[in-house]
Length: 251
Image 1: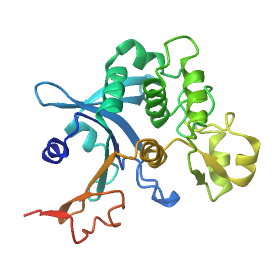
Image 2: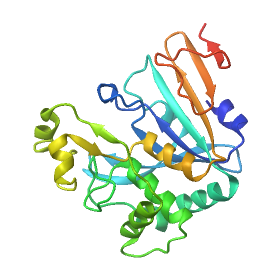
Image 3: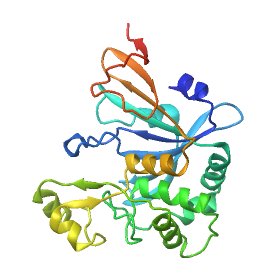
């Protein structure tokens, strides 16, 4: 992973992992972060992390090994990386590493399925996309930073793909599960069980549309091999390589 990042040619990237298993919703990636390389060559991911023991969200820095290893399934894992043009990447890196700015975007109450255009709750990926907004929109800090970030995202046509819940059970679960909420979602979404939520795929789509020069790298592993895949076409399910992919077999 470190070799692939070093060869990718970007010092700051948006990185996502297949942490929580959301395959029943046809979702590969659940968690995104901003990852940067320091002068010594070490990579660190800055992210919103829900501290279960404390019962509140935190901004958390994590090394590459810890981030990559945060998957529910040790037998099959995916990592997605987006490299941005230098100007936009620099703006993101500066905002992410500015402690006051990073914390200024931290919502008080976490919800795994937070609605992207409400400040009532926030999920991990929402912090990332709002950070992109203040970076690229050159938005000043203030008490209403999140509101202004979301206003900028609306104007920039950020439109997360709805997640088809598929069952009323999740709607019922939201009433009794501490990390799921529906108060921020429009009634029509609840009625149709189509919930808009900020997820890595929607962030990547937004970045690709706004910055056509962005590049994409995907790595995965199963129990036999690691596959390194370049380009915006997703690597095949099960971590099966294409003709142009690099394959590193486990011995």
